[in-house]
Length: 479
Image 1 (cartoon, rainbow, N blue to C red):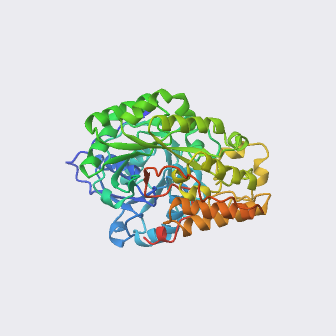
Image 2: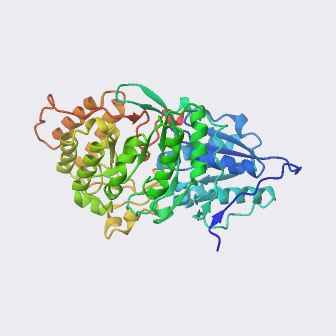
Image 3: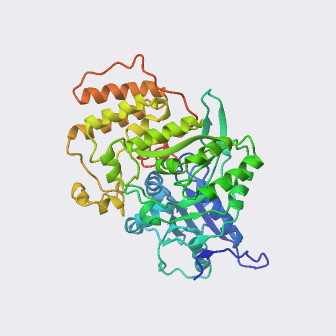
């Protein structure tokens, strides 16, 4: 059985009027979306007229939806899904009455019942491009019958170089901020999708179930080439884990470095992979790696076990040491509030960040993140975990839970408020406020941080990393 998919070019001599597709990106961490650009190329290859709309930077205007045959919205993360649902009434108001409405990406299949109830006709998950093209061809033939194919497809896709011509300029997106305050224009691409691992809280897992797929090296390089031509000086790789396929990753980096020796980059890599492939860290540095984002999630070994992270607190410390030895910044992310967290544990996490001199490496929003339990989460496989949850809430797109200690829930809300109110303040100043709040909540005296070493200011993107946060008022202004 053939497990790959290829696009046959459209015959330009055909007289069928162009089929208009509007691809919408609600939110992608402030980056120019690969998941609009990649399907744009494939849809144009089968004769579609494609318009792209990035709600991060553009308004939902009537002109773009006029005459749309298909509107397809990318749901790559929780925040994007919440924004898409909020925008849906306006989209339906502006699009023609017979427009087919589709949603694609990780959160499309995970929230299928709710989205269908909102009037979405087709839901595409996993390697969605083949089904998106097939949907166009079916609609173009006049077949408007309900979706019958499985929502999640994992066949390997033979990509074309992504088409970014209809997207806003790279200079309008999130930029890289260097330790000295200088900035760089950031390009964004993906070299793999899915993940080989089964971390219980991860939204990739219910869709890919331990599988990952690669984007052809020549396609990744062509995408980087066009972004460099558009001004990119740094590439941010959006792979769930860049070292799922280390050989593939290094081929991409070697070729990129050969073409653009001064190009820098960042990627997301598991603690487990940083340790298992530590021999590759010198090459990462030599090829221009400025920082690695790693989902540390907790410094409590029991919590790490519940989340199936396959690393320990000691492993985290060792990975940080290795990165520093090779001149690579490590940017850890956390799920600071979960059903197993305690006030003592939260203070322990803050203390560990101080001890490891990582305060400047962690966006304050990371100290406020609360565990999200979406539909299909592998956390539901944990014995007894479901007993902690309330009924699924379609507004928040998750199962609500309350901590056994009300003080922990109260602390989370207050830390989130501090992180949002002080978004533009220095990280050390925000940490100091959270440090005092946490000690006050625990009824403990607050140790002074007057002489504390918060660590080096690291290179980082201007858009904070919080893909599972509630949409902000600003994010909803486009419609």
